[in-house]
Amino acid sequence: MSCYGPLAQWYDQLTGDVPYGDFADFYEREFAKHDGKFHLILDLCCGTGTLTRMMAQRGYEMIGVDASVEMLMQAGEKSEGLETPPLYLCQDASELDLYGTVDAAYCSLDGMNYIPPEDMPALMNKLRLFIRPGGLFIFDLRSPAWLRSMDGQIYVDEQDDVLCLWRADLVEDEGLIVYGMDIFSAENGLWRREREEHEEFIHEFEFLKAAMEKEGFRDIKLCPDGPQTGLGRQFITAIRGE
Image 1 (cartoon, rainbow, N blue to C red):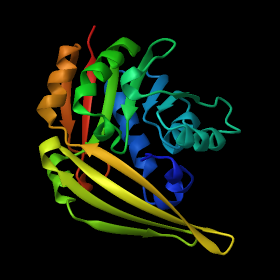
Image 2: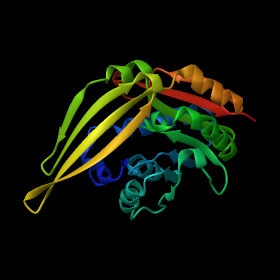
Image 3: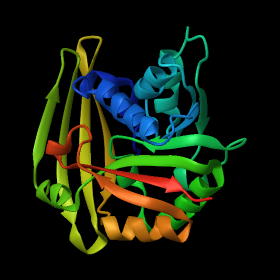
């Protein structure tokens, strides 16, 4: 079953409450703490590119990477008219392949929870290759406790022309939460039903820290002051070693 296929065209409409400006402000504060010399930025798992576009508007040269063609199509349309539009690449995160190094990379809004544990070493290796020495890697993910609390929950997101029903089921022995989504969209007086399934993996901080340290990242920290921390969101920052 697809992930971020049919949902892509409705994603922005259904996530209108995401405080993207707060995320951008947080990243810029972290840049300022580390000499501020950050110009070329990677938005890993960039989705529909709302944050990518916002960072480009703030003067950064942006590269957006996502595995969903449908999400990148939305991102490309959104970036039309920018003086320096982002470069978008359709790639799986663990197979990241850039044309050179970036000054920093960030991954927002659960992107890291979509990475299976067995792919995490490959991802960290790729990030070591493509973040310059002294550059930053910043990401957020849902805490293990928050993800486990989702088990059995049912949610309804309703707009004028789209209805999204989703259910969360914990698979404890595999360390993941599965979201089954039914998307109903209005079409010529009828309702069209499409389905998606998403899997988010439960990642402990120590597991992530060990994977990063193996690739030479240092000063790996949990940050208590990032956006949406009340919703179980944890932020981790790290410096790519020399």
